[in-house]
Length: 365
Image 1 (cartoon, rainbow, N blue to C red):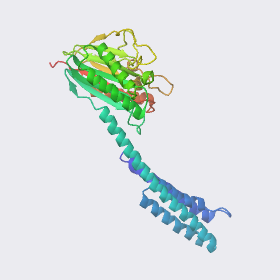
Image 2 (image 1 turned 60 degrees about the vertical axis):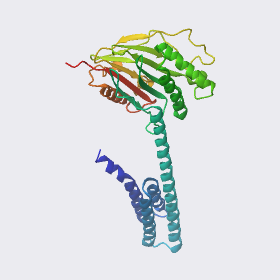
Image 3 (image 1 turned 120 degrees about the horizontal axis):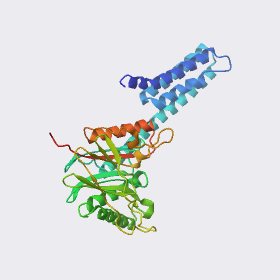
Image 4 (image 1 turned 180 degrees about the vertical axis):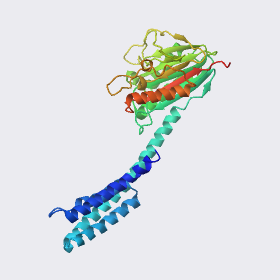
């Protein structure tokens, strides 16, 4: 990598020099009426688009000097000489203007990205490393490096009823999705402290989303639904309760096995039933799973389960077999899954990806 980066930095210089040399050779040796003027003019354009302002200015000046020298060498009259110089000079000035515009655009883009990342971190802060009897790790990966903002979210919180967590995905992208994420996370953090059951927590979040929809906020009837998995780990860490609201199921990783925890009965996403579609008749079932010492609960968004390879096949943590091994801590599991999805898609992801892992520590011998 250290060798590659300096080499890549030299590429713009090489392109500008290549255009300059090719223009000179064509001007000197090409038969009339062909000239190397277009290639000479291309040198400052390449420099203006890829190099710093001072470097681009230097290339433009050198190109003007070379143009005059070549015309003198060819014995051209004064008029064609000044015409060639004017053409190269004007294009050089335009290249410098382009350089300034690109620098300004780059600064604006960097500022916008920094603001978007700050908004994302404010809405979606990193969860604590340890909560109750659990070790926690999480990762958010945007589908594109330029877009550090999206609709996937997670949260972990210690409550009077145990450690509660959520992972979800709101419909939409960009700032509108982040606004909806802020509503969903805010509703979770508020209601998780008071709802005695997970089903009650889901219903309270539905009500919070309904209130936001009534105020004309980012959640608008069934157009702004949120898929989510709500989980609660008991105070002793021995059991985890799950409520799946239309979200990809979580996984239990334990003793070199990865088991998908499909819900007993499918339930509608959060926010569905706030408008034209009727809400469920009553609270759905709560699935309870034993969480042995050393086991990890793996929660993901559809950026993982809907990741495709070049043949269009979906990624599956269970069938891949790569998750069926021991991991020293939750961070190792998150890193392994992130890398495995990257290999599966060959870096060409179509959706954001959020991963949340909570693990129960093994007893010390």
